[in-house]
Amino acid sequence: MRRTGLLGRRISYSKSPEIHERLYQNKRMEISYELFDLPREEIRSFIDLLTSRGIIGFNVTIPYKEEIISYIHELDSTALECGAVNTVVIKNGWRIGYNTDVYGFMQSLTDNRVSVKGKDVLILGSGGAAKAVYTALKKLDARIHMSFRSEARKKEFPETLSITPLDEVYDISPYALVINCTKLGNVDNDEMPIDIRSYSSENILYDLNYEPMHSAFLRYGTSLGLQVINGESMLLNQAMKSQELWIDALNLF
Image 1 (tube, rainbow, N blue to C red):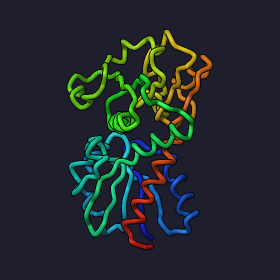
Image 2: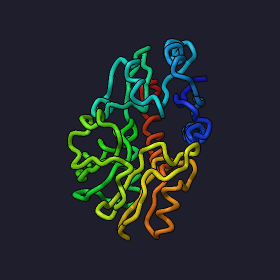
Image 3: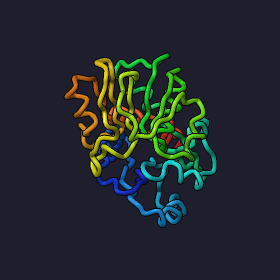
């Protein structure tokens, strides 16, 4: 059986196997999806054994979305623009990196009837997920603001209108959409990424974390009567796009 899966660390909570297995079953395709939960020092041997283990592609999550680039032969334009890879396709031994998170995030906004064109939005975080969201929001002509701690990261987001440390964000009222791209809010670290003291009834809170279903960030938004969006819609949409890439590379049709 051909194999696919998710490369990351401490990812036992992931819903990706369930989602991908269901999609494969709907396509009547005998392809498996599993978790490759590996420490950093085992990535090289994992990459070296891909073909011999029948792995035709894999997704990448925290904390390897940027690091995996050093193992890739070729980057798709979106992955190149993001500087982060979440999907790897193996074709005749050639490893090609893509970023389907960009598509997944854009489609999730459509699914939730959220328009950001010309609007001020705030991205929390600066890692691989934030890079995908930043790239998507540029394509959607949003006015992008960001919040993170790293001085070194600032040059990676040249079109950002403002950058504020996370612990200095209290007022979210100017932003149509606030997207949490930090690890704060996931099942292992369910905390508020920022201290919200002022808001508008028009604010929408989006947490890329999807487990738990309602993170501290989204629970707080709900308590304020705000629209909240969980990351599962993005996860499903990027999964569908990833499978398209893997199946196309097999030249089955």
